Amino acid sequence: MGGSLRIAVTLGDPAGIGPEVAQAALRSPALNPACHFEIVGPSEAVDPGHPTPDGAKAAFAALEAAADGLMDGHYAAVVTGPIHKARMREVGFHFPGQTEFFATHSNTTDYTMCLTGGPLTVALVTAHIPYRAVPEMLTPRGILRTGLQLADFLALRMDTATQRRVPRIAVAGLNPHAGEEGLLGSEERDLITPCIERLNVDGCAQFSGPWSPDTVFYRAAQGEFDGVVCMYHDQGLIPLKLFAFHEGVNVTLGLPFPRTSPDHGTAFELAGKGKADSGSMLAALNLAAELALKRRAQTL
Image (cartoon, rainbow, N blue to C red):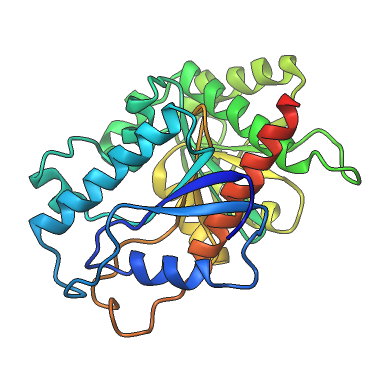
């Protein structure tokens, strides 16, 4: 675990699978050796599968320590293990998730939840809100922010000596069949299409759509698109987990530092049984290292 850049690793709820998948991933020969991964917070054994208030407090304290280290430059990136949000709320964690925690602690107001794995990369215009609130929460600002931040993320990952091109980004519709020319909803015509036109003026990516949500992810998985802008949480997460259940990574776009997380929960029912798959955590560690190294290269 050598390397000059330090990356914080929080283990999440100590009664979940976070500690064991992190330890397994950190021992993997496939781990990027160019960075030093440092576990933040206690890592002693607890009763697997049985969350407690003390465990939630330890997970909360680890997040705060990692945030402090990121803001003072001690860490170049952070990888977060899964937390139990209900237990965390009971001990004073008043955030919808870890995404919002790091955004608040870095004074970031424009940020995007993105997930990547296998052949898919998806970015969400709205995330942790009830479905009934999605239409009213869709705004031009949100769609434009998501598109631009996804374009920056894809361009950073594609910027290598052998691969330089403008990212191709599909924008999914909100309604079935992307509204069927207004028959099934007007959001595509009145909101999403004008945003796509504005995004294409920037020239940072090739945006197209709005595409029918029931076909766009297949097309992306076949290589037609590099990423998909999604209107709500499960529109993006269901296909992502179908294609990359054990290698999906959650990335927060727009922060002043890379933040990644494995795309799974605490899985208390698997904790301590040796059944948890560490693939998603390994992918999260390696993506954090990739992004931290590329950001450093941009500043040199």
